Image (cartoon, rainbow, N blue to C red; front, top):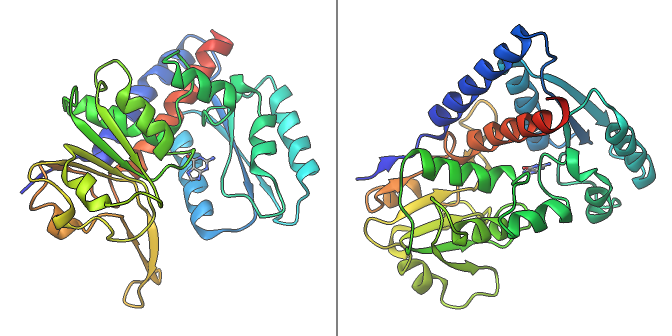
Length: 293
Ligand code: GUN
């Protein structure tokens, strides 16, 4: 039986800390931090995530702006919007919610964001700094996982960490952060992906598994070692007629069986997801401090 890594409670704690910081800023006559989000199109999941980011800003006293563009918007029009945000001195940071429609080149768009306002940490300048262990905006999901490990005082130094999935947003930066000097850190990392052979053999040798694959219930109990730490980044909408929304959010990990074998485990929902939002807010506070203080 494992201990739940409660991302919801931990994110609420971080938001509470940020609220106090914002209140102190306002009390001394300063403006609050300001985050903007650009959302292209009407994808249901993206709408939910961006809505949640904006609501979280409001909750902790940040200013927030939501810029919505039609899914037919051209790449040039999107770049124009980004340039405006780059030059908006009332704005500390902004994000462009991914994925983008197929006719828009994601790389071109991410490169157009001023690295000083790139609170997602996706610009090559920030990704490079992160990889070199320099202070910068760290992508919110891997940052949130590191923060969860830190607050639960889980020591991963010298342990074998296995990351499933090599995305630029989660898997790749996760593998770098876990191996970096620091606490948490100093893990021996294996980054696995769709071409990996004998995956189950590799995960069975892991002291910590981070799954960022997007395949519901992929990680089963037979794939993990007794007392491993299990971090589930999956948030797939699985159709379910019995649910009012018509779907259930399902993680990569077969939770019910894996929780019997793991030492610590993140639930879905309520694990990594809320931590992602908290760390985006934290990155925005960092941008503000560089900018306005
Ligand atoms: N899509 C999925 N996760 C993220 C994220 O962290 N940031 C942005 N901008 N888009 C995403």
